[in-house]
Length: 216
View (cartoon, rainbow, N blue to C red):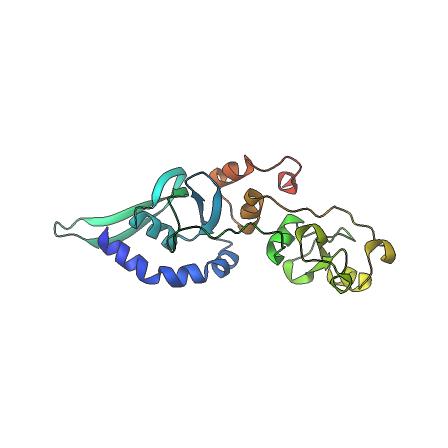
């Protein structure tokens, strides 16, 4: 176990730094759901970071299927160390620092917003790829509008350009859906592009029935 911990720990700082980038790139790779000891979801992590939680004895409970086995070095008896990683791990605390960073925020982030709105333009109702979408502020920022979840919707580029600095009413472009602030569980779910069945069940159990994720 010590050999495996040393190998994983040498790279954990860089893994944590690039975690957000990895989540966007690894849409074809399963990720591990990290929750605190009270069951509140905190983030997704790759297998390398998850292995470090195990190696540091920070995993206090597990749920769901085993998704990866990580192998380390051999001891003097020739036995190889291994860590079997579950898809959901309850941990006693973060790898670095004493407390988890509170990621609950009233401000919208781009990719999660697109997922919240199911990549649908709030004005024309068509679905687009992320590269064809923009964030539209219902009350324009130039007129005091904020970047909060409740003032932001997904819009295609033509619709956003057409609306410009006007409100939807002034532009005669009615919203097809109402923007809302997703819960912690919903935001965590929306951040991952490949959610396993056990992870989906765990997160959806605490998501309100009115959420759009139930329409998927």
